[in-house]
Image (cartoon, rainbow over all chains, first blue to last red; front, side, top):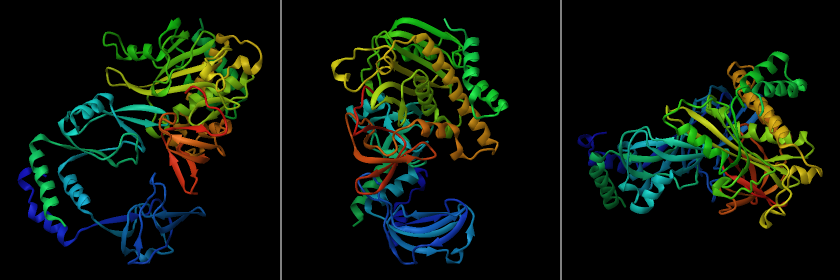
Length: 216
Length: 300
């Protein structure tokens, strides 16, 4: 999204009229489905100090007589169930349930920012740290003083007692948002960093200020 | 000095009782064969891994051969994870090797397991009742006898290597005070001295086999002949590990920042440690380390 195409009023009114995120839950693999919730049910996401307590059971999938209960990752209300699939065999990736998750102010800001920032995802499920150079620059001057370029060694990924340097391969820009704490265990594909091209920085600041000021 | 041909012969003889067919055994040995193709021996070094790291990053020389080994009789600045001091006097086996990262990510993650298995099998072959603690610490009766350090390193042309450091206490009989109750050696366990060169050769042969097995397993999986959970490296690791059932403290750096207590339930098909926490919930970890709460842990 370029600076010119960001229409604050349009974006904000979209979130005002429908302040929810709709999270689809799909079949994790092929198998026979049995739903464990009803439409309209309130469900809980993962919780606990280590994010180790599973969320509400949503469906059970059985393959080769191995049943597996799949739980919700997010809290909200079940807004859709593909009920006609109950008891049927489905392919991997089939949409089964949608959860309507109510967005908080912080999540709305993040949702808008994620349309503007370049998101750098975790390559594997592992624990992540900043490279020593980046960490020392963050400690000294703060993340938003750091400009990163493609090819920069920015992060160390620790997996199975093996440390691997991770090189940035996105657009050059300022390290605007950090979505992990050093040492956190992060799932594959989850954003680690949001990088803002320098020319978009003022726009990003406006978005944050506007949402903070106008959102109850 | 060891000749590469002798190592290949040794690896072949050690695999004589393998459960694999002759053709599979041949392929496994071929995958692992480069290990030990170049061996650089030193009396004293600061760290073996530094030698290889510098070699990879040297811009004025061609890329190093995969399987290159640096071996030293003693190290003066040896380190474990998180810059922990590693006691590396004469009488120990101190080595590092390079391995070009040609494995898919889902198989490359098992390289630290394969190295731990090779160390454990070597010690068992010389009479120590060694076992593995997740991921690849080698223990005898809860005392640490060997350790492995693994990094990924990028060479100048952009080639990725595994850089693996191994330290095993062979003939060490005196440990510093702070390690005395938590460390042991092959000599202390068997009551006799051992030839370090002979054990070094056996270790290289076992590394050839187990790393070769990883390459072969990936090949078989890609061809659809085995399922991921049938990974022979993981199955062998489970045979040698004593972690399941143990009460442990988990942490990324468990000595400086322990996170929580739990009981090890199992290892999942991706090598993750499945723990049952004190509140009965379960968690699977893919990075970090554990300390047994019912036994001494040594230098890491």
